[in-house]
Length: 455
Image (tube, rainbow, N blue to C red; front, top):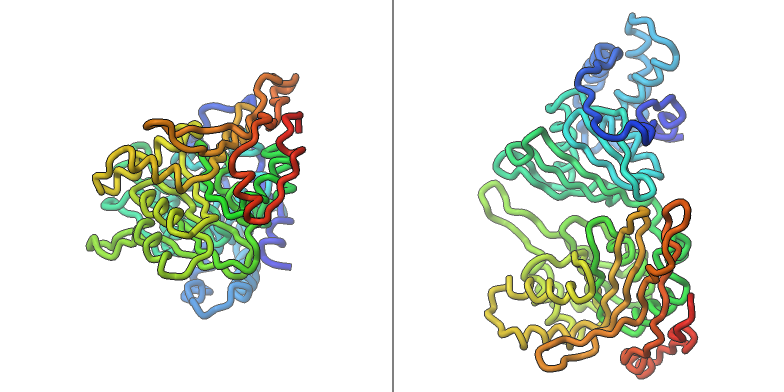
């Protein structure tokens, strides 16, 4: 049994979620931890015994966990402070979390029901469960404790955060996305946001069970991926774009060469032939930056069958469109937007950020030629993440790009007594042009999928 398993069996009061009636202000600076002195003493004793071993890169993680656990028990037995067995377990767990993990955040990182952790200063932590946000009783000791945790996270992936570079994107070893902001940008203390990834990547069956998509939509998207249509996934923050991108990538045939490009690597592709590229921020001297745009250009020399970009947010949009227009069919990316039409408007703006001084019509012709399908996703008021539109990019009429909704979410169905949306994705009954393209490529889409009946 691993250390984390043994610790999980111990009493974990910090993992208790504060009831909904106590939502609101949750600053706890006035409440001192009665075991703080004991934990500090045990922590110092552990450092005295293990010392440099804690930072030995050649020491196996399992062996390090075992040594920490054994030393913790010895130090606790040596400590003369009278403790109950429950308090002893709590001290052991929290000290081990501090040494091997991320301190008071560790119980929530282990909790599979927590999808996001939000630290609003050292004495205020919120978590997201089932799409809703709750305060929790855990806190950091002080601002320096929180800063040490942030620096520990970002150092693992070769990033830095300091007064000259007070914002950073990073990731945990399991791929969870991390964003940190420190003073002077953060006025009330350091801020840390962790968007967790499931230990086992969600499958298409999971998204159907969650109501994100229907079985008919999954069949259509499967056909579109196998038929090498270029797709853009749009939506707001936390709407599930990356999860949907992961699921779509699972439809890619195993014999194709896939290159993924991300700011912070978080995609979880299951195919064997996957090459992962990650951007790099500038060094302290302001040199050595590798942007998403640099990686997109370089990927074209790596003989890709598919290029998957975690998110487009700048002039890399132009390089992505050119890749889609030069034989790299079947590429997929995500971006932040409010609707399919807004996705195109944002893409147009980002192409202009490449400073190529292209006329508007030329940019729109590039987008029309490159993009076949826009998938729009939203996090609804009930906390669920749903695909709300699947839209085909048809062509141009004058200077306007014409769109065709293939599926749309039925908001007219209203909500039930629990506030949950009753609606689902429904076919509009219109036949998109890409059905003919898929047929030319040997991909058959059953007519029943687009029949216009409730799915």
